[in-house]
Amino acid sequence: MKYSNRTILRFYQLLGKIFYAAAAIDKVVRKEELDELRKSVKSQWLALDQTFDEFETDSAYQIEIVFDWLNDKHPDPGKAIHSLQLFKKKYPELFNEKVKEMIFQTASAITSSYSAKNKSELVFMSRLERALAES
Image (cartoon, rainbow, N blue to C red; front, top):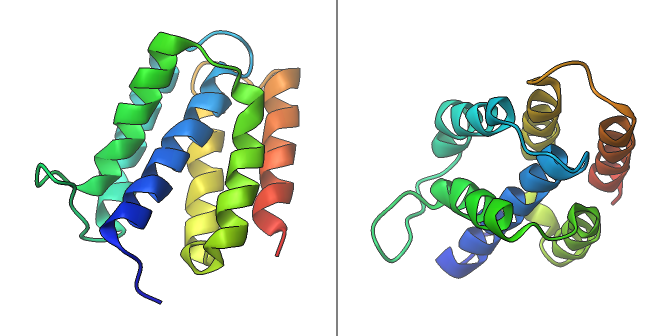
């Protein structure tokens, strides 16, 4: 199914929210986590599709834009999984196996970038894995 550019933008914005939550779930977003996010966007997410925003910028950069904005605002990262579940229910075709694996791998790379995962990160990753597996 073909989705509008607006829907694809919202998808990438949701990913920014998920990846921010992965980094912030332990109450601290470290430089290493931000570096890992930027690396993942460039190495994985830019190649996913060729959708552009109104400024002719690849839509995948919405991941970084939303992450940075949330990092400035410091919202509760615990709400991100619920947002994912709602969006996934509305647009299930956007979440094929490859995309679900990319989401999990990116979040895992972010949480592992500083040191071993702590308890809050392990719980978040478990919740993310369950949310991605739901049909």
